[in-house]
Amino acid sequence: MSGRGRWVHLAAGGGKDPILQRCQEREKKDMVYSIAFDAVKYKTERFDPPAVLINDRELAAAINMGYKEMGRTVPESMKEISPKEAKEQFLQDADGSDVNEKLLRIIKDFVPETSEWSEDAVHILYL
Image (cartoon, rainbow, N blue to C red):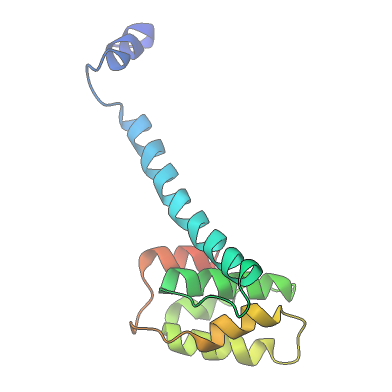
């Protein structure tokens, strides 16, 4: 089945289009990624003291945001080291910079519970 007949068939519930499925999966992933950035932004702008980070995805978003504030990109080596080591490396790189104090604080106060980045966190680091 091709052309209009295919779309009528799909719209009538006659099957799942693989292209549509991939788009929907990507939209879900993009939402997960944007939620991490939104959470960090909300925690640093709305609370004083800032609210704590809760997972490696939020840490990745915070590190990403911090490097962007410094006008730099996240080093490729970040994905190769643990979240704890990445946090320490970022704090060294940010020392003496103009990165938002609340952002620095929530990164410094976060205690990673895992020794490896999740797949989503790695993607968030490099958005």
